[in-house]
Amino acid sequence: MSPSLTSLSPIDGEMLWQGNVADEQDVRQCMQRASAALVRWRSKLVDDRVAILRRFGAELTARKTEISTLISREVGKLAWDADGEVAAAIAKIEMSILAKEQRRSDLQIELGNASASPVQRKIRYQPVGVTLVLGPFNFPLHLPGGQIIPALLAGNTVVFKPSEQAMAVAQWMVDAWHRAGLPEDVLQLLPGAVNTAKLAIESPEVSAVFLTGGRDAGNAIHRQLAGRPEVLLALELGGNNPIVTMDSVDPETAARIVSFSAFISAGQRCTCARRAVFLSSQAAEKQIDAVVNQSRKLRVGMPFGSPVPQIGPLVSEAAASQVGEIYDRLLSLGCKALLPLKSVSSNASLLGPAIVDATGISSESACEMNRMEWFGPVLVVQQVSDFGAAIEVAAETPYGLSASLLGGSREMFEQFVDCVGAGVVNWNSPTTGAAGALPFGGLGASGNHRPAGFFAIDFCCDPVASLEQSTPVVADPWDVAK
Image 1 (cartoon, helix red, strand yellow):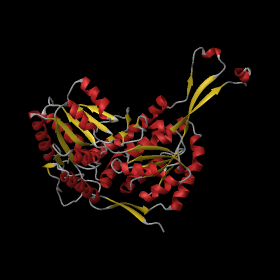
Image 2 (cartoon, rainbow, N blue to C red; image 1 turned 90 degrees about the horizontal axis):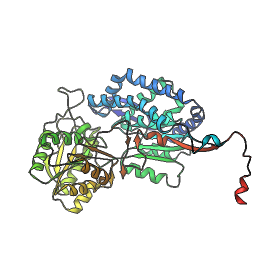
Image 3 (cartoon, helix red, strand yellow; image 1 turned 30 degrees about the horizontal axis):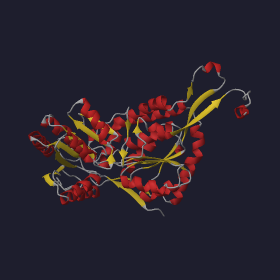
Image 4 (cartoon, rainbow, N blue to C red; image 1 turned 45 degrees about the vertical axis):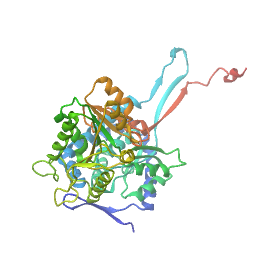
């Protein structure tokens, strides 16, 4: 008998979901059903698939308070943050439809005097096949939805293995799709943890694997798929994201943007700033002091608390413990605590923001720090000599998800974009800023050249090229050999 799996609320420990972990037989049957359903689903007209997508969007809209509350209860996300996630998930419907129209609609190519040629040149797009979506806990509705929606729109069937910490939200989402008229075998829920994912990836039916998660998980899947180039892999991974502040920026402005970048969602966004770089000067001292003071005053509390908190809990006590280990490691590398990490209530998953100063640590320690990946409310600040050094320090990481520059000129920002090595690069706004009409993905160790967002439709279908004419070629094609 398969072991049971439960999802408990980090708020009060209430059980929100209970079921069995999918074993080898469950996975095999799930993949076979998805493969059998593929022929029927891909043969549907695009307009019919669009209609189901829009009915799913209507389900989200009609029950947005219900799903937002469930997100808060299951992963600890504050109510205003969960509301924003639901709004983004709803907006993804029409954005995905637009993306398919603009980027992956069938196309006839006209070259020269097309009317004089009997040959038509066409591009068609076909679904990849059975798609395995491995979802995260931090955006349990929006991030897997950002891959499931375009995958279904393109005609793929989807097997969804969510984070085991967000099973209730995943179940709600899959049920909403089925209420919207999506056939059950076209989207299936696969409960489990790492071993379940491994079994699903190993399935001969799988044609694509989409992961949102950490670099270690991405590397493990990449290794598992070695020798299977026919399986498409799209990785959306983490980062060690820098935010560079010029000395002309008002300290209070810097404090608001830097603290928001670092501590929104309790630091549990892959785009959160991990390192804040300042130009050594009296201005930098004032900016750093302002960031520390602003962060110290942030309201930390549980979802649905009053007054409304600005930082909520981590997803679990284990996650909070891991953040504590990261903080201790940074101190052991020579960083100095400016705002110590501490629990702020009897709930061990609730941590206050922490800031450490890495200015002057050894190059070996800096190298290790820049290679670290963490997921919580810890920010490293550094001072450097000038803008050139700031770019160099910001780019000294194998990761390349997001980065931001505060202040400076247009020319300086263009230099920053060219040199920082990130896939999302913002100017005078937080590192966490992203738009649905843009691609979303990282460079280096933060991805594998498969940006999501508006570009997710690209890896959900394959182009097929055709040269077409209504009758067989009249001229002898072997004439070229004469």
